[in-house]
Length: 174
Ligand code: SF4
Ligand code: SF4
Image (cartoon, rainbow, N blue to C red):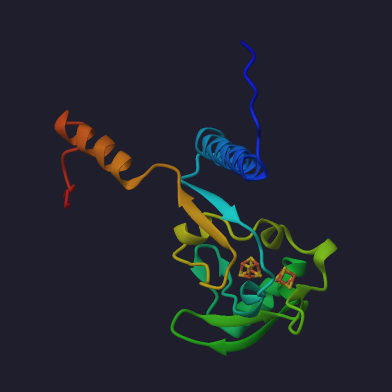
């Protein structure tokens, strides 16, 4: 017997949405796999830049494992890389000197040196920001999703603990 299916617009929309979600999930899972297995990362970056300009407006410079705290040091650094010549000191606090980038069009929130911006700008924000004790602003359109859920990490460490692979200096709290 021949069966006839009528696909309504509503059903079509639902099917397309399901397909879209499937593709998004697949893309995210692939990104996670690539980031973890190939790049050795712990987070995968999602979202996109919304041109808020925050990361170009409030900058700390880290050089040789420490944050630049004095002007003299910064002026020496300026000779090392063109990116530093874009920066202007706007403040100083407990962390160090605070800079803003003179290449930012503050009104539009866009980079006026976009084609020639430094690698650090092209790659921002990276997981390493956290590793260095930094953070991304709440306004940032990017987000970082842990590749492994807390429960998975907890189970893995717990297993290592039980099999004696991890013993000292390790406290499990839940
Ligand atoms: S060069 Fe452009 S992207 Fe880099 S900090 Fe300056 S304004 Fe931002
Ligand atoms: S803080 Fe994030 S969203 Fe804002 S300009 Fe920088 S990268 Fe883009």
